[in-house]
Length: 101
Image (cartoon, rainbow, N blue to C red):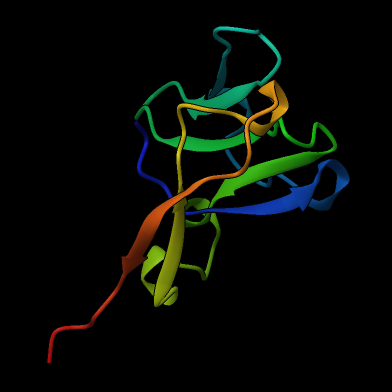
């Protein structure tokens, strides 16, 4: 469970400007998705989506100028049943950021 806020981009829609040589890839189960992470610190950076292989899911914490706290509400989906396996997209809940006063 990586716990990252991810946004989508087309495969040609992102450019890695630093650290490419530090990225490692991990694949499991169907070996369809490529999960990228920093081999030095272990942070999840991005992955090629199984539901849409023409897109990346990108950890917003790895984007310059963007923070997970920029999103007041983040939908959370059931990660145990995948739409590519014929299951409906099932929303498990919503993470809500409420800044301290």
